[in-house]
Length: 494
Image (cartoon, rainbow, N blue to C red):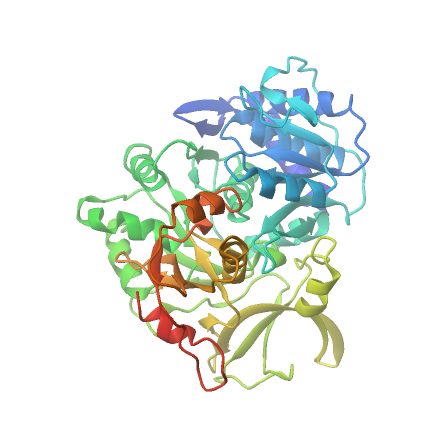
């Protein structure tokens, strides 16, 4: 499946589109032929190493070597574990240790990971063609992405070749006519699973992928690409166009064909305004947790007949073979119109969190659906279906939020804050800023104090997007009727 649905198609594109552009990185174009050479040189080097574990660390850089490394690993039957060189050292070491990584691929001029078996991909010269895939099991992993965890430790989401192949097959249900002439935006870090859609789907169609350099202001660079390079296909998180919203009056992108959104709730008013900027494009709201390989629902926006709830667009209906069910607190499937937890049954569903049986027991359960016992995943999203079967997102059931599309466990933020503060209590909350985007607000149960050292500590433990951006002090936390901290009241402080 994987070799047929993904690798064979990619290799055929490389063979037949050798002189066409595959990437535009920092305003420089790279052809499919150059991509093939780069894949080969990384793979040749991989074959000189002893890789006891099938997981290989990949430092996420915005260059051809990094993307080529993904395909070199897949040809070998190995998995990549994306690692951000900007993340705290402790967090990266945690990811590396959890994944049992011994070999790391890094294209940086000066690597921070020289104490590992390091492949410096930008310095490789052996370009002997080496593009024949190894035959391996469909259960082999293609990547592990680590997301925020409630205990302060990131949790690994392993995706198999079977999962990714099922996703590519499901994605075809969107019926997007992407061709070799298209210019497709890739604005995501490789530690974010939406990156997989943004680089892989265009390459399988022979299109050109336009990336965003790490050292650029993201929303500003995206605007520049849209304005100067006639980007025709985009996938963005809604917060990205919130940043662009002040400039909507100046924006007109008639060559855009598809504008996809995922990762956050999509506000109807925002879509209405954005649609004026892209008069010839289809706007599509898609949904899917990382655990179910990126995307599993779609809703095509129709300004004349739009479905929304509380001002938020529907997430639509399932694509591919994913079954979407909504259950009550007793795991009983509930009727359309009733609110409950959205659960997923699918070939795209990961085998289980990486070495985390406790979390697996919480997240997965067996349920009878249409007379068959199925393995289901709890999304943590409260949803309901209307009479036509369209899904609507209501809220999170747990203490989790999305920041710039990244999933953040608020308990993880609290855990690190409390570790530093000792006996002083603290609560992390998702709060909305003036642009309508989510930020993390922190309330400390104390009189006002200097938090400079606290913030310096947090920066050594968490990525920048998880650092609280708003801060309040409360001498004594309010309690609700159950004697628990009244988080709703605390949220009103912001």
